[in-house]
Image (tube, rainbow, N blue to C red; front, side):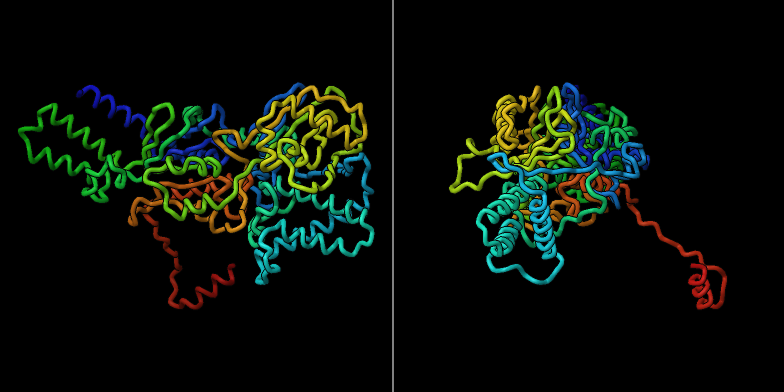
Length: 553
């Protein structure tokens, strides 16, 4: 019995850290990197997968490396990911975009005149910008218009009313529909009717456009992780329980009356007991019990992390970067005690849907070298269609990544259905689509088809965060709110990071990165506020000194 207790105590001490970071995605890595740079080394990252990076991951095909997750650096000015990429030579400071020639075709293989495509695209961008303005302005939308989709469809209908020709109306309506499908992949939703109109402008778009890293987005992981030693990262460690307030957790009730004593006061209590009972101080069993109580008492003030493999870890603080999709699935059983009700309600209100990619790799080029994207203008259905027979109609375009690699996007329930299909079946369907819209029966079958399955993945359960109708930016702020064990604690015990916790940059890598840094910075802040002493030169006339400061500035 004594040996078992001793082994348990040694194990607890071995697995005790200042900080545990749950998740080795970009948020967790950003936090760890900041710890290392500030000399704080007593931390560990627990990553569920066999690799780090989270939703940043690439895989090799026959002739290409493809990015299954994050694709772009969204914006330049004020973007830490762009700064990181530039500092490490991953992107050219002078970014010269390649010529982008888009064609749009209908189901009968007819190309739309570029002038018409340009006209509708300009109108669509204008409608979208008007939707974004509601967040900053005081005026309200028309009655019964609550979503982005409803508002854009209303504006599109008004715009098309002026056209007398029904065929012209129909063609332009198909372009609007295609652009709305594209927006679902950008926003991360099933339909734009799901996105709250008043909150669309809460996302801050950084200037500079979307930047591609030539060597692949995954190459950004190297500069983020180069200072983190391998022993600080444990992969294949899915977390199944976070016991973050042991004073509320039943197994630790016996320590409730101790109050908020520090480790020093714990030691004082033990020492006082041994002094009060000198005749028992030499008894090895009593000494062992006291030592065990001391360890248990220390751990009672720690967060306990339980992993799927049965391992237990302990820390003073935990940074939780678990994706919103997993929180939606597991929050009821993951935390003890349960998270506050306001957090649970915010988790429930926000969206975290499927957005998937389809990569088609060919052994030879077959598209015109000048064409970079084919927009697919699907006919509008007259009645609701079975998703199993129509899922592919959510694919709004194929983009040429290289001359022999095409990329398609699909979102929402159609993406979820696609995740149930074999890649061969998806590849065959895409070939039929291309032959149909290009009006070319000789479009080759791809030699490789690779599809993502972000909704099916157990450690993501979706793509990225969106603000649903009825939700708001304050829900993201609620998710980011750290939790304290009691009001007297200087630092929180449980912190949250990840793209779903950044109220302005949700859904982006730079949002996740900044949230991880913010969580780490909060824990790196000194426990005692240092007093700032203003060195005032000797002067009897304070007014003259102040004026001097102003002049010096």
